[in-house]
Length: 271
Image (cartoon, helix red, strand yellow):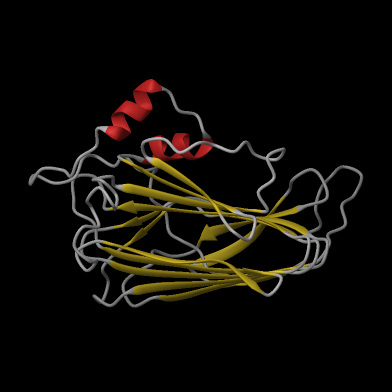
């Protein structure tokens, strides 16, 4: 395993049982701030298993007034498995955030990828957020989508065809769609589940807080949860409801490549 990184994204190896490896990004500086250009590259070797997380949520702040940009490039070779599971990104009022994720998958690969955007801190409007995913598998396009939120987005982004007044948007991609590994959840108020032509499954949730969004994504929903989400409307002029996101912490950025990892008898990973 090879790790390379610098502030504000510092990669650290986490000791986990089994043959897979886990890396956690720890924030080394405040940010991302307006004008920051962050880049993450993840390479998973043939047959390797890797999970990448961030230690805590991050808050995008206005900074210079320019957009804060993060680019993530992921390559998974034949037989490799990757779980890309960053914590939520909070886009503060006045901030501009642009995220682009490009994924290239080989043969017989597995991918679990998530993104959670919190549109504004508690009792404030959100900034501008643009998220783009480009995913290809075995040389064919699997998913290509872009979503925009905030004052700079097209009118209607908070309407029934957009977030429906929700302040948290979560997106998850699973490839391939294997029911034995994760149950196929139905679409319910606040959660849309879409089977992709290439064999994957895309799930999108909208909610008024991060906890409800997480429950919808995990399928831990009840009558009270769906009733609350279904009743969400665009907030009144006084501002959006309390997002109650997890405590914000800085984001991370890294260059990372992996190959199959040897594990000793105790299950500890080499550092």
